[in-house]
Image (cartoon, rainbow, N blue to C red):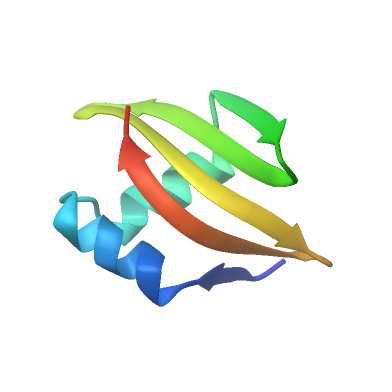
Length: 70
């Protein structure tokens, strides 16, 4: 499975002070996964706070749309 990054996600990640390693940790070891409006919302509590990743599954790949602190 490939993880595809969008320019929007990379911009939001930088603005919100998140590291790519943290985003990969959220996706690989989530605390919760919710599906709404055809999108996956993957959440994990990190040392610095809770992060949610909004993504969609395209065939066997995951396309990350945006990331944010909650």
